Length: 250
Ligand SMILES: [Zn+2]
Image 1 (cartoon, rainbow, N blue to C red):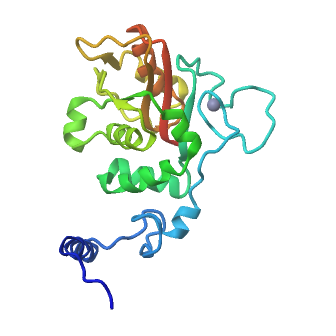
Image 2 (cartoon, rainbow, N blue to C red):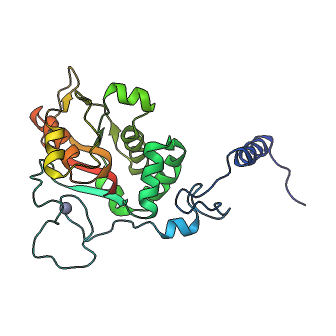
């Protein structure tokens, strides 16, 4: 005989089934319905297969994977002109194919519902968790008006999600955005760096601890200009151990 359903689990499964009827779970990458046995709620098994997870060996500065090539330079082409003030960066995945769709849905389509899936993906990446563990995560801030318009800061969502997964982490909002910088999508490296100059500051009263390891967290690393600008502000405020982490490498 089957054991009777406990009322609470029955209620939960009914609510879950009802939500799935109201909001059918389509894969953010393929658009197809997500199979019941997919490990993610909003990524089908086919969508998951299309995600490129970053693994070693990778660039020590930005974490871009070397695809097994032996490069003459220690750092990858993305970082050669960066002059990073942070030591080490690590993305969870590459912003291509399904990875790009995931970032896009998170950032532009109120993707809070994707955070449990992102947590699951992050938990499955030992290298990513090792990078984060024990650090104080500092989200890249949005300009206040932009955050009000959007209703959220996806970098703070990510920092909170990563902190839960990696263990021993805290999230601290130490930075403010002092200028509403235009979108960087169509800017080259030099323009991005100019765009970011003076765009961030420490929150009033904040004094970074020189003994704490800070990791600046953003959704995407493209040229590194944004993360580097944030790290520079923390460094000038007294931080001595600075790294970066991001959901995706552009
Ligand atoms: Zn690099």
